[in-house]
Every structure is written in structure tokens, then in C-alpha cells.
Length: 143
Image (cartoon, rainbow, N blue to C red; front, side, top):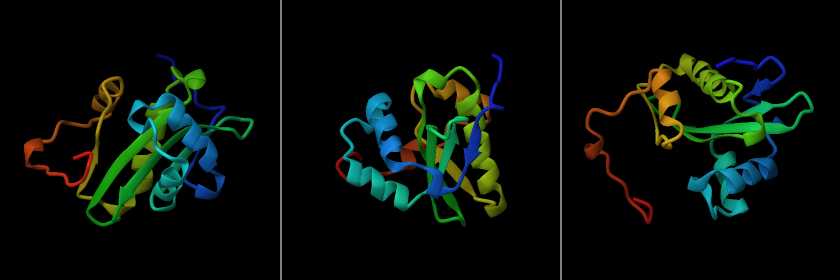
């Protein structure tokens, strides 16, 4: 695969991330976010570390967010790239960008719930299955 990311900008500046566009990308292309109301997505953005990919035009074409305490734990979520910009290595570079941003915090664990189509990419980048995933518990309607 050819990686072509030079005409894109990666940002961690939430002021440059358009919440309406994030919601649109997730609502249209992310099965895990289907039906998520805009106000809920806006709250998630407001309470997370946010990362975007901007096209040369300034349009947001990719997004990821991280929920973290910046001490021990982080959860990578809502990784999405507009289908019109896929197959250019952008998701891979976005994940690398996120991890580089988190590196100074020396987090003990970063987790994610990989989609079937994303699993291979995450594994290529060094992510591994948890040793004891059955030890993780959840509370709430989606647990």
C-alpha cells in the first residue's frame, strides 16, 4: 500500500475540529455510532482529547478521540476516515499521531474496541488482544 499523507494535516487542536462534521462522518459511516444524537456526540467531544485529519481545503476528513485520565489509562474511540479519502494510509497515520501525542504521559494501558475491518491495522501497529478480557466488566445498557 502506498502511504500518501503529505497533502493532509493532522491536528489535536479541538478548535479546528468541526463537531457537526464529526457527527456527520460517524452517523453516515460508523455502524457503532448509528443513532447517536448530535448533542451526545458534542458532549463526547467536549470531554475527550480530539484528533482530526484536515484536507488541504481545511475540511475535516478524519477523526479520533481519546478518553483518558492522562495518568494511567486511555481509551481510543470513534476512529473514522471519510471513505473518499481512504486507502491512503490516513488511519494508520492518525493512530500514530494520537499515540505520539499521548506518549509523554507514559500511560499504563491504552485500549480500544476494534471493528472487524480495523483489527488488522491495529495489529500491524502493535496492538494485542488483552490477556484476560473476561476480567473486564461493564455497567449500563450497552454493557
